Image 1 (cartoon, rainbow, N blue to C red):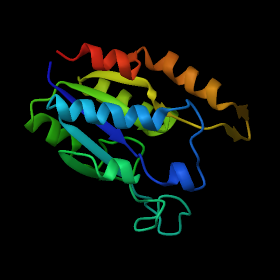
Image 2: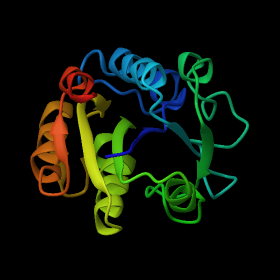
Image 3: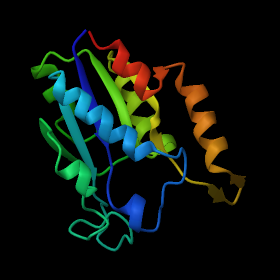
Image 4: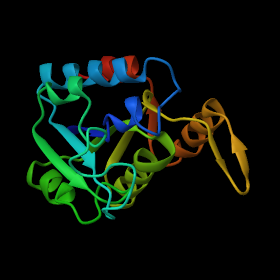
Amino acid sequence: MKRALLVIDVQNEYFSGKLPVTHPAGSLQNILRVMDVAAAHRIPVVVIQHAAKATSSPVFRKGSPEWALHPEVERRQRDILIEKNWPDSFTDTGLQEWLQTNGIDTVTICGYMTQMCCDTTARRAFHLGYAVEFLSDATGTLAFQSDVGAVTDEELHRAILVTQSRFSKVMKAEQWERSIP
């Protein structure tokens, strides 16, 4: 098994912007911890940064303070930074080519948001033939409401983790750390 840690969209938007992540508590600390563990074990770290396709978008506008990576992610070791414009980290990016070039067969998912870019990237990785590890306490979300109803942050997170178990090995950051030889 050759892993890569995918750190998805850990950007200021989720801390000081319009989409503050609220669940689970401690998700950022767990993301930073797994980044440090990956670096210590020479597991490649792929940091993925979302940029809105439309220049009029109020969120993830490239160059805005909210678009910037969280300062703690920015200062940590990474092997590559990939910019994306879609929820799926593979679409219109060099991620798959980079993974193939580096002989990666397993991707570990952490970051934001659980139900959007993390879930979409994990499903696509599965469809592309990668083994997928999904870190339940190193991903996060917020309460969500639309025309069809509302869901709490905890309910949304749990529902995605339950369905994600079809595509991924869902585990806590500590379990992932213990699984590294």
